[in-house]
Length: 305
Image (cartoon, rainbow, N blue to C red):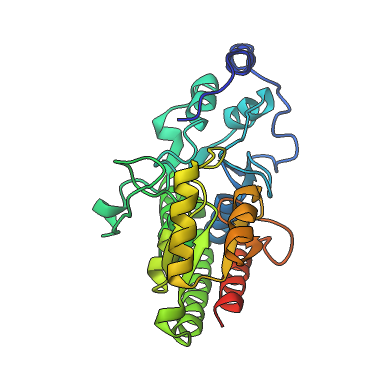
């Protein structure tokens, strides 16, 4: 879990103790089921599950990085008024627990989308290279994982608010159908690429599930974790791997700087493409989950062809 400045956490706890602002959800419809998500990606998946049956808001705005996010007192206020707090779990957004505690919420108010899928849905996790002994949290970058997330959200809210269940059922079926459709399209697109050419290098270890879904080899990653610079030995090993594999494109992420990739590109002659989205939505056409998947795929396909 990323450490937060003590002053910030003390401020959060002070706000919670004072009960927060009575207008913390002033923009939300009165009496609507209130959903707060950690990231914009999960907010959009919640929208695909719930539609207008709930008011949905993300703590981290689109374009911001989940790894470097710092909470504020207003985030505690949002959580205090929420009927459901949605996070990924698996270490991605562990900072949310401090806000949940400060807001006086608990396990019953929280849905961790990425945890327990191996028991409930037969999901096969990948190991997390950033934290040995843990699982890769970026499950939604395989559309099949995103469909599981949408179904989990729909099932959870339907149990908590049975009066919304019928509306949620229709909305979530439509959302999952759209996710399955883009999965099928991307499978066709990548199948048209010679398997020996499906090799990429990414900024950090976020695209394992995407790669597994479409049989892409990730030759290497530039940094073990955002904000953590690689050693000279690690950079040299990646340069050697890039040359051996014949990789010509290195993929940065929109919300992360690519200085290390720029250095590697200068050594190898590869091109840095700052096109991929992992933990957050962005500007159109990547302003939705489906748009993110299409944008990522088009960037990778363009480099592989």
